[in-house]
Image 1 (cartoon, rainbow, N blue to C red):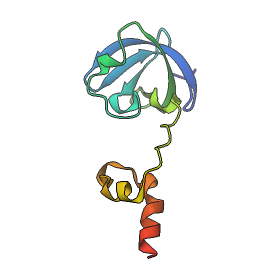
Image 2: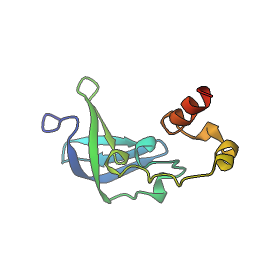
Image 3: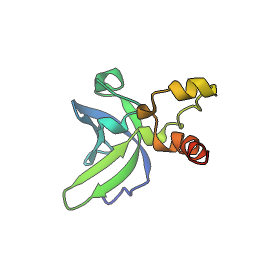
Image 4: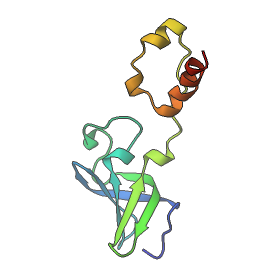
Length: 116
């Protein structure tokens, strides 16, 4: 594990898939876990839709826990950010389901509403 640091971007090979994530071999002695939430932006129902055993993937090392001998990896961190949302009319915006938008996406709109 001493060959790796948090923030490194490395290529590894998928060596195992579980319902909660995929194990990626970074070298002959080191493996890490890409948690299901770190595979891609958005909801992942089945990891097999995105990865398969033996597939080479690029990952970013999020955290190294030397005491527990665990490495947390992310593929999502290497993706470009989500595309900008299309501009909507005021009526469409009012009808949007605000519960599924992130705070960052809605904060400006809420500030404008509060200033009225």
